[in-house]
Structures are given as C-alpha cells and as structure tokens.
Length: 77
Image (tube, rainbow, N blue to C red; front, side):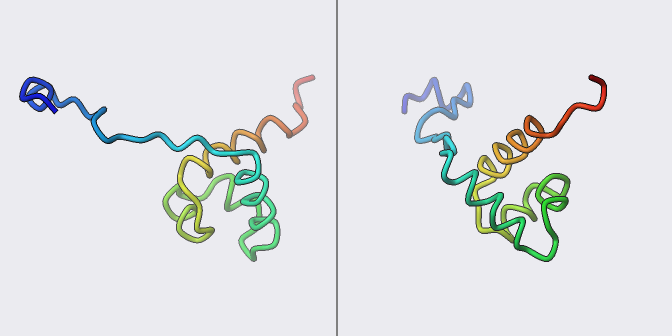
C-alpha cells in the first residue's frame, strides 16, 4: 500500500466483500424458522445479535432479510 493511500484512508487494500450465496441465505432462513426467536427475530432483531445467534455473516443476514421482504405479499396491491 502506498503512503498516499494510507493518508487518504484507502480501505480497499485487503478489504473483502462477502457475497452471500443462495444456499447460505436459505440455510439461515431455515435455521431461523426452527429457532425459538423465529423469523421475526431474523427480520427485525439487531443485525449483530442475529448474526451471532445464528452463526452467520452480517451480509448473509442482510441478504436473508431482503429475500424475506421480497417474498412477502404486498398489502397495497
């Protein structure tokens, strides 16, 4: 990493972005359905708490929430 990028605060060096797979998302949703806190906790619990309890990456939690939101029937139709 160059000194210039350190000064600018360039965080791209060594940074990774976890791209959740369909299997990870489906597995998390299935685990949430079986968990005593249920899907409601997956959908609205604190991100870090949901990730910790289910042993999932925060990006997987976000992807699962998006998946569940898209799957819900819209009430304004």
